[in-house]
Length: 241
Ligand code: ADP
Image 1 (tube, helix red, strand yellow):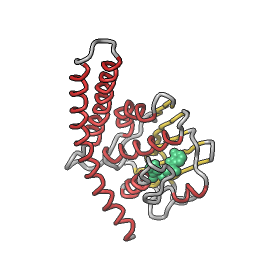
Image 2 (tube, helix red, strand yellow; image 1 turned 120 degrees about the horizontal axis):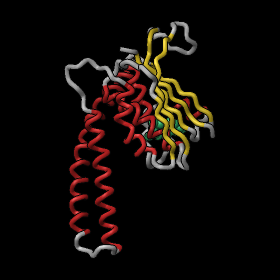
Image 3 (tube, protein in one colour; image 1 turned 135 degrees about the vertical axis):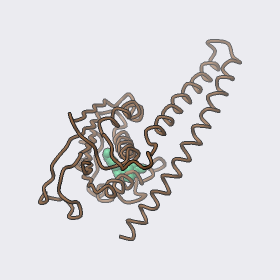
Image 4 (cartoon, protein in one colour; image 1 turned 180 degrees about the vertical axis):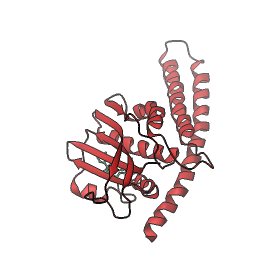
């Protein structure tokens, strides 16, 4: 238990660091964009230099948009008990999810007709969606299909594999499916370990740990079904509000 709370504390501290980084990036991207625009004006239309400077400015603008969007979506609402309409949040995240996975990945977002509310803060639901879609993207370097679904499901107490600490009841289920590399048994076994990553240089190994921390704190449960060269399905169960 002591390890888990240490992880959770580390995660809260990390959240603050990330918020600071997002803020700084927003400022730095404005500087890049502004200066690239100034630079572009120094060159005649159609020259290679002008096109390059314009590309820098436009890309910085896109990046700033993504970061700003992330800040709006993830802003906590103090005083309001945490609950999130998953379908509404997925609608807000639609553009960002598509930007993350890129043009080579086909995206299907399939909300259920009436998901109600999940007992989790919007910022945390956002983190879950972004972490899982980033992993899906990484698993499909040459393209594939990403499916994000919501559902409402009644979980009985005797459900096979269901942890005893999670009471039976109604759950909002978020499912993220990719047609990527999948995980072998050894990888799956360690996937939630802090700092475990199979992506040297780019991975942090905290994505799934963070997702599981959020889900556990919210009184929910996470399941992964995966097959090498076939893909991965991650199901997140959050108590229905
Ligand atoms: P990171 O993505 O930074 O490596 P994570 O904790 O999110 O950290 O994931 C840990 C590891 O689990 C990944 O390095 C990868 O090997 C595996 N993994 C996670 N999600 C997927 C997925 N959708 N498909 C294949 N492997 C995955």
